[in-house]
Length: 158
Image 1 (cartoon, rainbow, N blue to C red):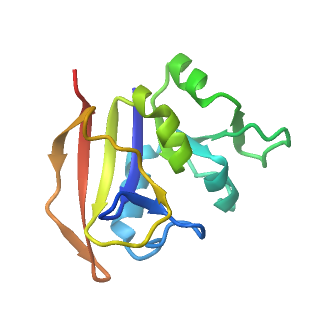
Image 2 (cartoon, helix red, strand yellow):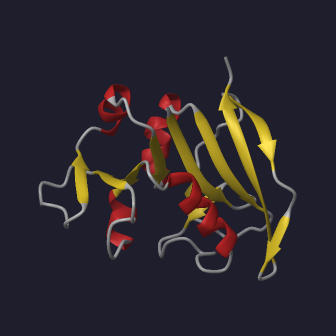
């Protein structure tokens, strides 16, 4: 199965030029990400890779990049994310960034989206998914550090 996992603000934003604007302000979302992805593989774009100090623990860390330079220890290069996702037999989580999500959304079976009830003035956005996915689960709203959010699960429409 191929999954995507992301947190989106009210306007579908997932990041700005400095990274995730709500990073560190909603620990439950970090715990949710860790719970869902631990023991699996995660595919990240080059921008997210560059923000990482070290590989995500207890996961295979794949980086979608065409950069010819070697990656740091603990990361594996994927030069064609689409081909990788089409051929893999393992459970894989696509975690972003926006370009990677946009280019692979049609291959994703399920979305695990944290929907944040605020506008963080993002410059990078999750692709439009409403036409191709239906919501199948939702938590009650949660508020941490003045930020209200909901965990949701979406499955691809048949």
